[in-house]
Each structure stands twice: as C-alpha cells, then as structure tokens.
Image (cartoon, rainbow, N blue to C red; front, side, top):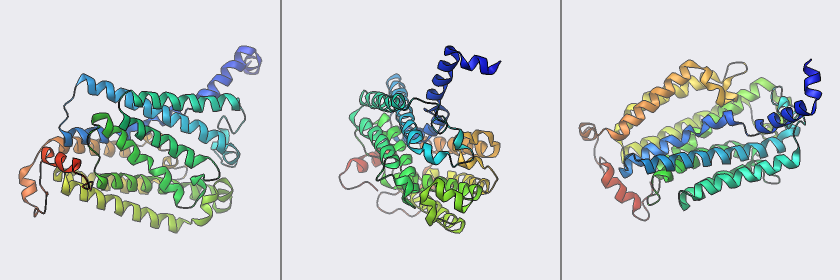
Length: 340
C-alpha cells in the first residue's frame, strides 16, 4: 500500500519536497539560543530597555540567523554526501541517499542565504556583517580546497567560531554603536570549541579509528587522549576569559560559575555514552539534567546581568575600572583601543 502511494506523482512530489525541506535542518535552529546571551548582555552593558522596536529587531535578527544557518546546512549536506554514506547514521540523510534534486538544492542554499542577509541588513549594517561572517564561515568550512572541516584542529576552531559570531548577532540586534568585549568573545569561542571537541571525541569512539578517518580526514591526527586533552584546554580557556570579563564588567556573574562548571562536567560525562546525544546537540533536550542545568545557568546569568551588588564588588581589590557599573563601562567600550 505504501509503495503504491509513493509511486504516484503526488507521492513522489511529497517525498521530494520532504527531502528538500529536511536539507534546512530546522530542528538545529535551537542552536541559535547562543544569540540570546548577546542580546541580554548588550542590554545590561548599554542599559538598553526592552521595547517594541527591540522586539522587532530581535525577531528579524533571529530569522536572519536561522536562514543563514539553514543555507549552510544545505551546502554542508550536498558536499558531505559522499562522506555521510560512510557514517552509520548520517548515511540516511537526503543527499546521501540521492533523494534530492542537486541543482534545486544549490538554489535553496543561495536563496536562503540572500534572505538571511537581507533581513540582517534591514536591522543594521553591523548585524549584516555579523550574519555575513556566519555565512562565509559556512563556505570555508565546507568548500574545497580550503574545507576547514578536513583540517585537524582547525575543524574544531572554525566550526566553534560560529559561537562568538552568534553572540555578535545578538549584541548588534541591541546596539550598533558599541563593540562586544573581546574577553567574552574569546570565552564564547573556547566554550564552543569545548563542545565541538567532545562531539569529535564521541564520534571517534563510536565509529572507530579506521572508519572515522574515511568519514572525516581530520580525524587522522586525533586520538581519544588528544581530544580529551584539548577539551581540558578549551574548558580552561573559556573559564579564564569569562572570569576576565566578569571582573571587568559584571562581577555579579561570579555566581554563575559553579553552574556553568557543573554543566560542562555533565556534558563531558555524557560524551562517553554510546550513541551520545553530544554528537547531535539539537537532541540534547532529551537529557533532563543537561536541560535543567542550562535553564539554571540562563536564569542566573539573566538575573546577575541586571541586579547590581555593590557589596560584592567591594570584596575584590579594585584595579583600573574594576567594579564600574554598566553606564561607566559603556564609555570604555566605545573608547578606541579598549576592547578587552
């Protein structure tokens, strides 16, 4: 009965439409949650108040990011099809099983990217360049001869740089006159590298050293030990620069440290599970402990972004501009040469 249905013109059209829609990987849109901290922290530092205009800019910015990410996913699936056929799960992707029209799929990639850029340009030129950077990183990550995803270590760093880019998207949704703190951007980058490195570690463990190298050439330089060592490096770097940020701008965020550290520890442990959801972060919503800790982290960061605690600042020795409140900090952000 099912075969008869699929064999009809209507059934074939629906199957083809579903395959092309799957190229967008809309379920991965949850990753755009990394834009929200950029919005919240920019509002805190610049003292921008919630308004209808900000809500509209936020919606346009989020839609722009989703469109650009979907464009990158289409390109990724088209160029990765030969490699995905070597993966035990990704071999079922539409492009891998040849269920899409390739020229039409490339049209999807281009049109979706242009829509994302147009939406960003409608908000500000700063947001446009942030979104454009996200699209360009997708090109560098996927297209030969550069194809950074095939270069050891650079594959992790080039993919995780999308995190600070997403932060900038959130930041420039709020303001186009100030620049994000460099210390926070580095922390965001390192945190993304930590998550991406553990994804590579989980893939390496599941597929096996020989098969995984055929699936992704960058794995030729990796081992379980090296991936775990780099995970520690990325985690330490992330927390170091996050600490530099809070000492300079929002000492109140120190209360988020234990929750972030616990979340990173739980994520680390999760990477050892067979068929770990770490390989597919968009499915982490199925992990109650991870989601619970994520909600707590977001809540603590939101509260400490706006609630001033002068007594806490007095507990730490002041140096330079330590302990300044957001209004004073904004001046230092706009001053040339002061981006840390």
